[in-house]
Amino acid sequence: MGQGPQDATGNPGAVEIAPGVHWIGALDPSLRTFDIILRTANGTTYNAFLIRGDAGVAVVDTVKLEFADEFFRRLESVADYSEVRVIVLNHLEPDHSGALPELMRRAPQARLYISTRATSMLKAVLKPKDSDRPFEYETVGTGDEVSLGNRTLRFLHTPFLHWPDTQCTYLVEDGVLFSGDVFGCHYCDSRLYNDRVGDFRFSFDYYYAHIMRPFKAHVMDALKLIEPLRLMMIAPTHGPILRDRPRRYVTHYRELSTSSLVDQIDNDERSLVVFYMSAYGSTARMAEAIRAGAEEEAGVRVSLYDLEGGETEPFVDLIEEANALAFGSPTINGDAVKPVWDLLSSLAVVNLKGKLGAAFGSYGWSGEAVRMIEDRMRGLKMRVPVAGLRLKLIPTDEELAECRVFGRKLAAALVGGEQGRVIDFSELG
Ligand code: FEO
Image (tube, rainbow, N blue to C red):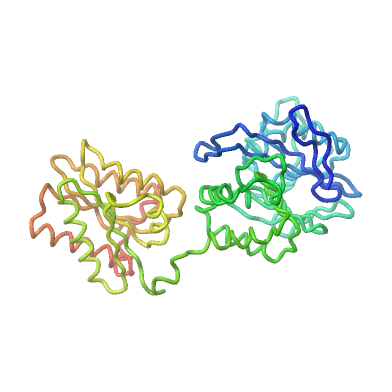
C-alpha cells in the first residue's frame, strides 16, 4: 500500500493503509513519559486517519497540539479541507484532540461526531474564542452510522478505554476498526505496521497494564462489540497499525482481562489477603492472630504475607483477585512503613471498588499508621467494615484474642454475615 513522499527527517508522508484510507498522524520518538505515569523507551505515535468516500472525506482523530503541523501537512497531501465532511473524535484527551480546533477552523463545513459522554470534555477542549463560530457536533452511540457514500462509519460505544468518552469507529466495507486507545501502545516506529516494526509486545502489554487494566469489565464489554466484527485491520491511536492477524490482539485482550486465578479457587470461596510489616514481631503476631480468627469463618480462604519477603508486582496481581485485604503496619515516625505505602500506591492499576479493607498494627506512642491506611483504602473506594485495630507495643494474650475477633469480624463481613452493618465510606464523599 502506498506511501507519500518522506519529509525532511526521513519520516513518511501520508501512508495509504487501505485503498482511499490514509494514516495522517504524527511520530513522537523523543517522548519518554506519557501522562506522568507511563514510561516509553522509544516514544509514541499519535495516529490519525483520513477516509475518502464518494460523498466526502472523513478525518478520524487528530494529534497532540505540538504535532499539528505534521498532521496538517499529511492531510493536505491527500485531501483539500473543502472535501472534509466528517470529523470523528474517538477520544478527547489532548494527545488526540490537540489539532481539533484548528481542523474545525480549516474545514468549517465538516460535522463533528463524538460520543455522548464526550460533550462536556469537548467544551473544555475547544474553548472557542469569541470570534469563532459555535462548534457544531453530533453525539453518537453503538450502532449509529455516518455514510460517506460508498463507505460507512459505524460507532461502538466503549467507555473508559481509556476515558469515559471513548468510542471506536468501524469502517464497515473495509473491515477496519479505528480503535482509539484500545489495542494501542506507546511504541514509535516509522514503519507503522505490526508486521514491519520492531518487537513491541512488551510495550503492548505495558500499555494494557497501565491504561486498560483498571477497567477490565469495560474491556470485556467492548470485546463483546468488537469480536463479532469482520476485522481486516485494527488502527489504534498509538503505536503500530495491526494489519497482520489483527484478531490475535483481540484474543490477547480477552486473555489479559480474564482472571488467571479463577480456576484455582472454589467459586463459593471468598479470599482475604493479610499483608504486614513488623519491626519487632508485634504486628506479625497480630497478623497471625487475625488470620487464625478469619479462618474460623467458613468459606473464606486466608493468605498471609510478610511484605519484607515479596515484590510489589505479584502482590498487585494477588490483590486484584482478592475479595478483602488487611494491611498491618507499625507506626514509625508518625507514619506507616514504606513497603506498605509502596504497595498501596501501586494499586491505581486495579479496580478495588467494593473490596473490603482493614488495617491493624502495633505502635510505640502515637499509632497513626492504622488510620492513615484506612483513609487510603477508602480513597481507593474500598469498604472498611471493621474499625482498625491498634495495639501498644507487645500484644498480650487478651489482645491477641482481640485480634482473632477482628479477623473473624472481617471474614464474617466478607461472607455476608455483617453486611447489614457495613458503612460504605467511599460512597459518602
Ligand atoms: Fe491516547 Fe487516552 O489518550
